[in-house]
Length: 261
Image 1 (tube, rainbow, N blue to C red):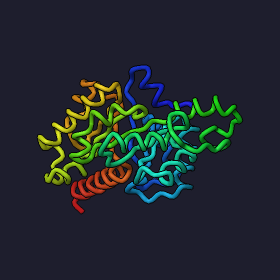
Image 2: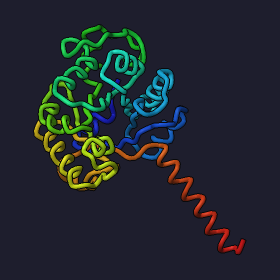
Image 3: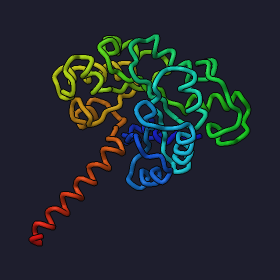
């Protein structure tokens, strides 16, 4: 299966994603396409998603030419294998603290000889096409991206080693959890958070890997793009929906005041 996000990155372009934390219906995938996003990630760490939900969203994404990722809750066979079989083209690993943890994640996401993932011959991952096993595993290994999240002081200290792990494709910050770990809860633009972004981005760039940047914390996105970041992460569906609802309610209040009601 083709990976639109990888194709854009290979061409030196930026790619735009947002996250899903509460949307389960496949219609949201069409909306993301119309809105101009290149993909999304399903937040299976904090959102309430069944494997059926994940499969439906991932398959619709591929049908629409979008790239679906999933943030899993842990680096285990049970957490990673099924969502990859369901059609996910990227796995986000939270709380990666060492190169060893990153290497384990890669092993769970890749088929031999790059890892130890089990192969389902027919399914969403293969597009239900019958291909020789050798050809299929090469294509599937290439289509999956592995993203390691830096969310602790330990992960930050080991960012260079994590980024250097073969098979890790990108680093991504978790500014809220990192702020908690650093004893500055919620201070997402704190100098220590800004420094963490800078160090992690440099670690990714130094290893020839990508860096996922967004507006949830850290330096401005434009600054990170200027430093080499190419994967741009928007907010989540809950936040966008709440913003739109709040704006609509405020607009109605203003209109009511104008009319004198």
